[in-house]
Amino acid sequence: MRANYRMQRLFVPHDLAQGLEIEADTQQSHYLANVLRLGEGAQLLLFNGRDGEWLAQVATVAKKRVTLAPVTQTRIQPEHPDLVYCFAPLKQGRLDYLVQKAVEMGAGLLQPVITQHTQMSTVGIDRLRANVIEAAEQCGILAIPRVAEVVKLDRVLWEWEPGRQLIFCDESAETNNPAPILKTIPSRRLGLLIGPEGGFSEDERRQLRALPFVTPIPLGPRILRADTAAVAALAVIQATIGDW
Amino acid sequence: MRANYRMQRLFVPHDLAQGLEIEADTQQSHYLANVLRLGEGAQLLLFNGRDGEWLAQVATVAKKRVTLAPVTQTRIQPEHPDLVYCFAPLKQGRLDYLVQKAVEMGAGLLQPVITQHTQMSTVGIDRLRANVIEAAEQCGILAIPRVAEVVKLDRVLWEWEPGRQLIFCDESAETNNPAPILKTIPSRRLGLLIGPEGGFSEDERRQLRALPFVTPIPLGPRILRADTAAVAALAVIQATIGDW
Image 1 (cartoon, rainbow over the protein chains, first blue to last red):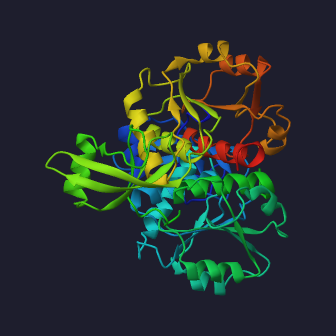
Image 2 (image 1 turned 135 degrees about the horizontal axis):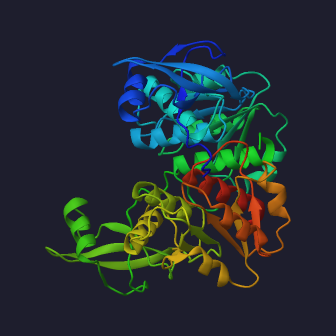
């Protein structure tokens, strides 16, 4: 949407401070030196999820190794978003999309959850993490959501953090509008649970509705796909009781 | 999200009523007869955007021609959504996605708009229409959004319907939350304008802000891609002043 971020933004695991010199990893070095063809002195932005955003210069360019020197901090590190985003893994293309969108919409923790109708039983956590970093690089996000290991829905619910509310999108709700329901939620520490393409089972729905920390919400009169529901729910939550 | 729609749903241009016999077109006939391998008497759902949803039976199966007989109406035709959804065409993959999402989120008219930073100067209107029908088939939507011809932003604004409000997502807004601003909009006849990946130009922004029927809204503290912004804006609009 915004055209402000033409400058290359790169995630690095290293500390960022003036006077340091950072070695880009092999893949990044190749990209900077051979694809972007940046020379010594070229500028780019660095972030590590801890030290805000830094304007940096290419310090040295060797064949397979580029070093980078942070020059000055351009943005301070924002508070880490608190929202726990629980989702049933979808097929790979839609999953990549789901993860990207969650990062843009301000999730703090991505928690893959296996439900009864989940088609995927394994999830490439490394690919999820890579997607998170890519979305953060592209969208100028400095607080990088954490990615948790895949767990079953039962365990997520048993081990749910006391005081945190869990919102789930319930297609069998009797009203259409989530906003009035969201406003009654007693806490601002929130989780959102997005079901698989096949929806939740009747058992899961009953189990969820019976829990005191769970709030079912509707999402309008039309059927939404899981990935649409995810963005729509995040938008309404953020605008009603979240960080917008 | 919902698992209720396992039965095949098909769009047909024909009238739907009891006692009629409808010829599926060549592509649909091939799909029904050779891919799904439906035999005579098999059930499916039909809709045409006018007569609601009908349970139908396969009446005859010939090599390249399947006929279908509507049996009983299963849902009545809902009111056509009023929301005008103006969008700068994106690259094809993201455009397909954008159109799907707009259908799910209740757009009534899809209006492709060329802006200064729009990368695509032509849009395959037939492909847009095919995407709309596919999304409607998959998501159980009966009111099929119309697709207008591509026009330039200037002309959209000059010819804007009196009394209809136009909302656009303005990344330079000074607040983060769209909900309070949306609530001040004096009409429920709405349009939404989503810019291209490169955003609106400074001129366009100025032009839009100066128009009495235009309301700029923010979409949170983070940068959103155009396709994310589209779903997020639609969700907040529908939940605040729309049809949810």
